[in-house]
Image 1 (cartoon, rainbow, N blue to C red):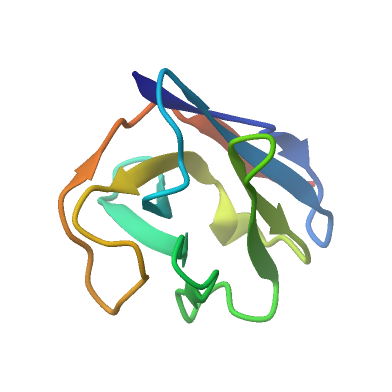
Image 2: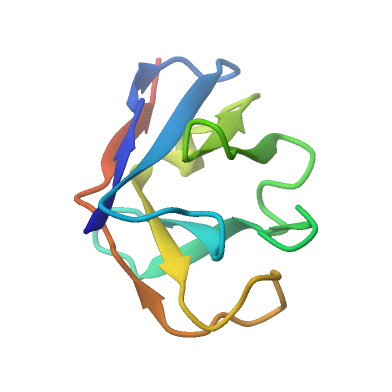
Length: 124
């Protein structure tokens, strides 16, 4: 039972990537799903969240207007569309399920089912 993030890669500044978060062994329907990222030598930071109850979303200030989170119930997956990428977006991106919340809030609950993450490198 875990989530697997994929879709990372090397992209030039200003480019786009679409990350996927796929579940194995369980359904995402009942959880708020979070995206986090961790740059080399830095702590893991929250990027975005999508609710299960009403599909409301949360974005960190650093990505507002550039990133879009969405979920596909039929495919049991969550996506993070990243546009206008900047070098400071370089990080390993992880998705996780919030076991205590169906709706995204300013804080997170117990996060679980972390996968290995996917590396995003923004560089010219």
